[in-house]
Length: 233
Image (cartoon, rainbow, N blue to C red; front, side, top):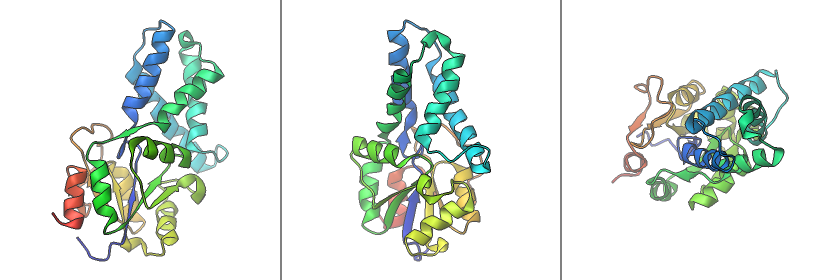
């Protein structure tokens, strides 16, 4: 690996945190309380998909600036109208939204982060809110050198400025920064912004693998593998 890398910025939504288990458990619990039979995974995937679609509207300026927590709640308003059998109240929506604040991580993440932080500045760089990533990190028992949420950068990934601002905040060049993610589109955008890219694909991770990953500087099949490649075995 090029020795000039000083900072690792991690995507975390899906890449590090298991959003599927936490959101599906919360929706399933509520549905059972209401005696409602429904496709819980489909509901949660639509929740996440519409979050990114709404985020794109924010990026274009079609909607006012808002963070991921507000977008998640906005989407629940839509889903509540589509699933009236759930009879979602404002309190229900706030309760469901807390699922994003207690996400677990893939099992080899904690040890890998400890190793990586011995050699690099290791930071989150996410479209999720600061509150989500701090709460979920504490829930999962992991820590980072920094928590960068795009809500404070004034621009959301995958705009080039988001990646470049992250490097600037750490006082390094984009070329000295490596984006780490499971999502090829995120990594491709980071490369276009001048960063290096590390693609990680844990065995347990099944979503969002679309896109060619062959052009990334690092290909890792786990976070342990990533740490081996960047820190040495």
